[in-house]
Image 1 (cartoon, rainbow, N blue to C red):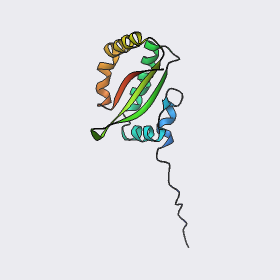
Image 2: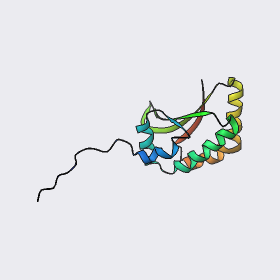
Image 3: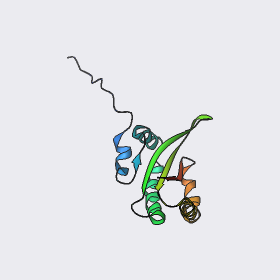
Amino acid sequence: MTMIVDTLTKPAHSEPAIKPFERLYAFRKPEEVGQFLEAYPFLTPLLREAHDKIDDYFGPQTAVALEVVTDPEAMDDRELFAFIQTSLPSQEALDRLERLDQDWWLDASDRSEGRLCIHVEFA
């Protein structure tokens, strides 16, 4: 009996890795984000928590984009960035980010093992 092997390859990312976040975040290069979340699954609960905290400081309708960023000087050094997209005046947005950092992120960031950064991005 001959067995036929399906030679179709699985997509570069596993949809389940980003699926839980589709309502919470926008994705830049979803395949890269999916691969990154598969490689660092400990980020999943932190991303859920980050979404709630960002809502608290920037408002519930604030868009946040996830993107994997590679350090150009160290190609194997990659981080997931959460870009808080805001139209707030720059000083106000930076003040809110500073409060978020002081109240939550500086302690929580240890759990990211250096793999997640949160920044503002002006729309």
